[in-house]
Image (cartoon, rainbow, N blue to C red; front, top):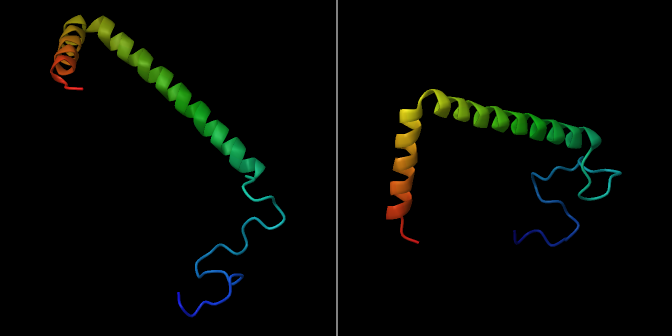
Length: 80
């Protein structure tokens, strides 16, 4: 804004209370633990999803075969 002449004036809407006493860019301990837990849950979900797909392919071989053929056809018609 043109009326803001001072560089040390905070812009409106900035979080004034965040990060006091902490190094810039440092995350709180709880934040890191929450992120690690989220990654563990996501990894477990992806493992379960892959296992479910393998099971479905085993019990429905015709569907798995048509899915493979469909994927191969898509890859053949895709232009790099």
